[in-house]
Length: 279
Ligand SMILES: NC(=O)c1ccc[n+]([C@@H]2O[C@H](COP(=O)([O-])OP(=O)(O)OC[C@H]3O[C@@H](n4cnc5c(N)ncnc54)[C@H](OP(=O)(O)O)[C@@H]3O)[C@@H](O)[C@H]2O)c1
Figure 1 (spheres, rainbow, N blue to C red):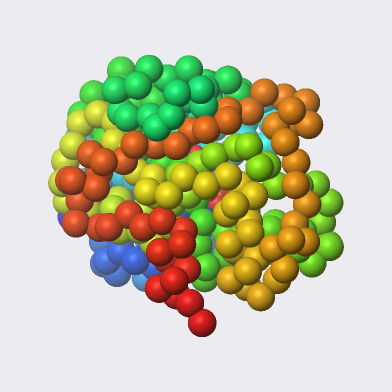
Figure 2 (cartoon, rainbow, N blue to C red):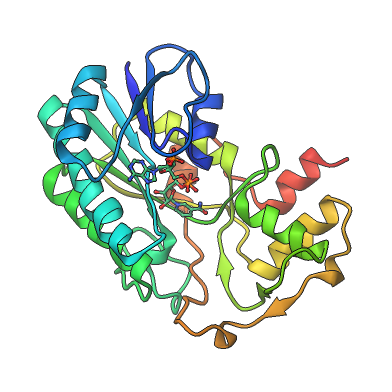
């Protein structure tokens, strides 16, 4: 089985490469240099339809795990997330490859959690809207694809960007605050990566939710991470969604019971992982 990972230099992409097989794996990089030497690295700009098709044709994958994305600007949202995903889906269709596409809990408005796969999406942020357009493109171009909606991805080694931000705030090196009224199904990066490798072996058409079982606010998450890393959780600055100028979904907790029943990989909550990794 030949597997290609778009976004091999990203946080999830690196975990996939760490935890997956060491043979017949390819991955793309964009701005960062490629990593792991055993991987067949290819430079790829997801916005370039021809380049995407050529790179995938060269590697000739059986399965593509599409994690690459960017959301720095409104142009990125359309070109990278919506159109870029369509380029990947078309290239997969042309090659007869299966596609596992990474999507987000932000396709929901946060008003009626927990969200099962059957819940109607209603994104309220430009990012969520672009990710929903990407899902729609995938479903139209390649109905056999698996669309994995996940939640905030965290990990211990290396630290994820949210945990890094928490520690900087705890150390007084960063301003801002952690939302006490924004809830997510934080997913441990290794659980997510292992679940995705299982899906490589197990074709599944349609949407699958893969989130952690413990929904926490960003503040509650931050307090646990700060304490784990020996910081004072009470030092963390707090903010509310109402303090933020743009709308943000309040509670995008995912109902991942289908994935839990389907997969061998156990999806663990933040506290369970921290207890197991505890010092
Ligand atoms: N992180 C989360 O908490 C979270 C939550 C829900 C869903 N997701 C979804 O999970 C997926 C992976 O997230 P992540 O946190 O691992 O992302 P990430 O760390 O930000 O990595 C993004 C990846 O995309 C690549 N990339 C950016 N622009 C590109 C372009 N124009 N052409 C080709 N590649 C490009 C980057 O390459 P370079 O670094 O080499 O430039 C990098 O490898 C995304 O689809 C995201 O929507 C993430």
